Length: 275
Ligand SMILES: [Zn+2]
Picture 1 (cartoon, rainbow, N blue to C red):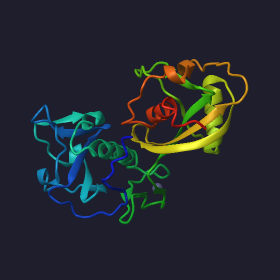
Picture 2: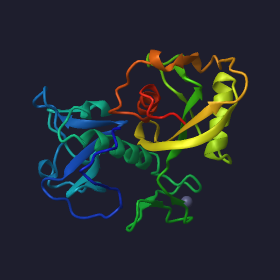
Picture 3: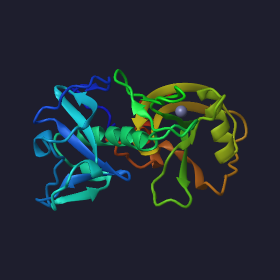
């Protein structure tokens, strides 16, 4: 999965320090980053050495390298800098750059929406000691926001419930997934989402693994569970176009480098996960 960057070590504690010349700078605008595309075949995340006069915001570190954030209006950008989607970072070296970029985009998107106090309308200011925005007028505090999501592998003997989403460009199979609502546990969320999306009841809900998932500002929690009772599928048609019990030997091999969903499907497919 994309967040697994060992032997490198991700340190997300907010420990601001003056940037070094070879620390990385993410320049953020509207959900994307400016990369130096002077060499179109090898776009490059800029270093602090490229913008030595700037005052970037500390984000996090991987090993001894720190990552910082600038907004497009903070610097004057050379012509070779182009706004690129986050996935443009995926092929870049070092290999942890994709995870670093996704994590930076989650934090940047949060900062982007926390400029003004939602209670009194005053301009928020950054805390000196932690990643938090403070209101100097009414003392409101805004902490980084993470939206919890469940990913659910529903097993029915030797078959797994695979779904396809309606109205989305994703054409490959997925697992049932959904945001946790205020007031419910993960286990209650699993049972509710499965019933809402495919109309079956489940039992024996058990946690598998979790994964940070910046694309939806989320922390994903993966669970397997077993069908309880009638296996008849009743689709929630505004959300899903298909929900099928797919036999283990008919599940296509999954590319597990990126996402928890693919890893969970693959674990079932290769029978490493059985109970
Ligand atoms: Zn306020």
